[in-house]
Amino acid sequence: MGPGTSPVLYENLLILQCDQEYGEGSFITAVDKKTGKVVWHVTRNHRRSWATPLLIRTPQRAELIASGAESVIAYDPATGKELWRAEGVESNPIPSPVTTQGLVFVSAGSQAKRLLAIKPGGEGDLTNSTNIAWRYDKGTAYVPSPIAYGDYLYLVTDAGALTCLDAKTGKLVYQARLPIPARFTASPVAYDGRILLVSEDGDGFVLRAGPVPEVLNVNSIGEPIYASPAISSGKIFVRGASHLYCIGL
Image 1 (spheres, rainbow, N blue to C red):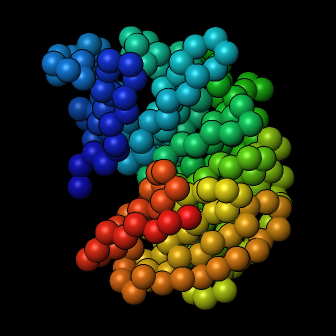
Image 2 (cartoon, rainbow, N blue to C red):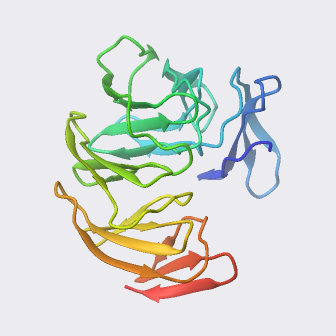
């Protein structure tokens, strides 16, 4: 299916992670967003990935974190220089990295279930260092990305199993199931202390964020949903199989 990551904007650069099917020809590159001229280009020895790189700012610098089955690598987004690397997620990464509480979370769930919590800002190989804050080997999704919101990290599997972890420690807070069976391709989004999940059947589940699994509402748009919702200016935008919906919060 080819590369599936989204582009990332950093200052005057457009950054593209292009990991190929079996690793041959994989690369990450940055081009000038106005002219398309290549500013930097780095070869990667990583097989296919659909996880969009995460751009963060630590107190010292900006870091571009690219998830991979073989390794997780942080680059200087301005130059492409490798800042640090850590063990990979083993499976082909489809969920994109997320961040909260000073940690970056990378995950995958195709061949193996794996979640890593990494403290950014390091140097060199972090695999056996204290920068690996914790690991969790259950509950990760094949497709949907996790969501980091406040003190917690929330996982939802393709089959609708929910896991809430303490973001700082990795301690299990709860595991739960939704009130009706559902499958998910879209990633969750969050707003105003709530988490929204939309299923392939077109059902929307509104959960209260926090340490207790509480479903506040369930609604349906009556058609399949595979794309993740977007939130802007007090409205939720949902793309169904046939229509685009704008819903006021």
